[in-house]
Image (cartoon, rainbow, N blue to C red; front, top):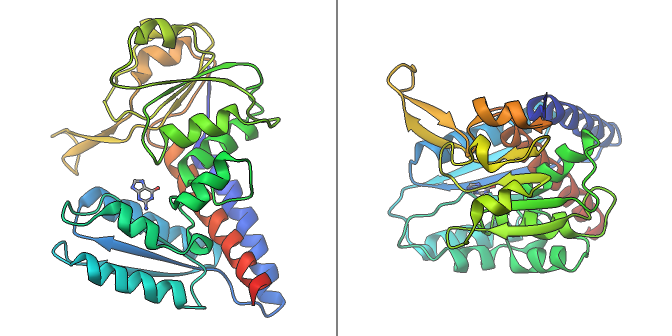
Length: 294
Ligand code: GUN
């Protein structure tokens, strides 16, 4: 069994990005600028956004964090989005999800200028991705494909089972893994909470990408020998023995499944750091796009 070390690979990618930024600066070109909108005080969202801001510093990007009270109106967020869309000094931005229930997520995501949509959540980018056109690819699925590629895992013709149909991970990764490319070209099955015969399907998988959010859902008896496991789950589970009062659990029962797997991502240190690296990659792409446009 070999660990798919997302932390290590994400650091390599961040170094590559940093080099590009240094080249930009040496040519008197302004470095990329990423902004984030964070509504409310959800602990997990705050942690994720802080990691994104810190990663910007590491690669030499400028970053701006706009925090709003959870009672903010939809109109006020839309006004902020309009400002960010018009601001030539901001190349890309994200609206951290989830948003409070009184805010229509769909309306917010539709308001983001697709050219600045570094999360790749706007239908224009999602549609372009699905049609094999150049697009911003959502950071987590993008990171999964990149991690498999850097470990030279053969995905061609393999049965890839995706667990979960979220707009952020399950749905897009199922599209990417089936695409005609050297690093994908898999036969994809997407399963979800209403699927029948889950165990039969997972047992026939060469690659399993789990984005379900149920701690330790995938057990050893549900997988075949030498399977490749990508665990996207990051659920906070109460744990009084930890200083923070919780521990982070993936979707996979790592202890037993890792004994059967050929490759497996750890949680934490697998997909999470890759997501941040690919968000930076998308922001660099947005900056290059803005240079071409101006
Ligand atoms: N919430 C969970 N994952 C993500 C992500 O990748 N981007 C944003 N904006 N919100 C999230």
